[in-house]
Length: 271
Image 1 (cartoon, rainbow, N blue to C red):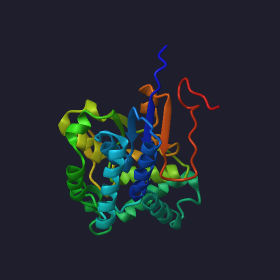
Image 2: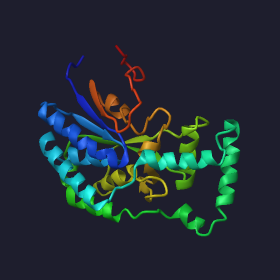
Image 3: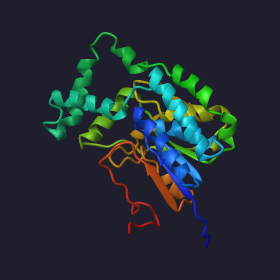
């Protein structure tokens, strides 16, 4: 039996709060931590790509710091996932969608039928609200795709989208406890053709309705953080690192109030 120790780093999604992960990486570098592989969701996937493409954690921390300073000054990524879905949830609650949970599906359908009469709603259903061109340009500037291809193994979570509005409905139902979302899939970035690697990173960060989904190997994917909403299966992608043989997994959460133990993974148990 192999006794090789492998340490994985999980970078959860969380919108603009992703700047916190630059500090996490800096602290790990100062402690001399050696990372064997990474996984990320949404903004964590983008941060993970910078780390994977860097020669060491110290350089990764410096690059992330530069990236997030730029983001802070230019507001390229100003969407906060928790606020985004919280506002939508409050909208539905204000319309009495929570009073009778068993009827949530019917009420949501009714809501959409009325909303669909709003001028321009058809465009909202099919067109993203924000352009991802600034984000793409930023990645072109900060991400060395050649180094990424040869760098630390990186896994990202991707959500098989059914369309932005349907994805949001599923997330709201899960948040209200009357449903859940499909599980995310985990994609090993370096296994993709070079031309698809950046597309997969952008797909993982494509919040529904805000950014357009991306086609990866024939399937349309959106924000990986939506997967397995109630247990954060997609937003905290521990699974691919455990499956790849990590003995230790360090998780950088971007929200509080959530504990993830090891008992849900084969062969691993909480102390």
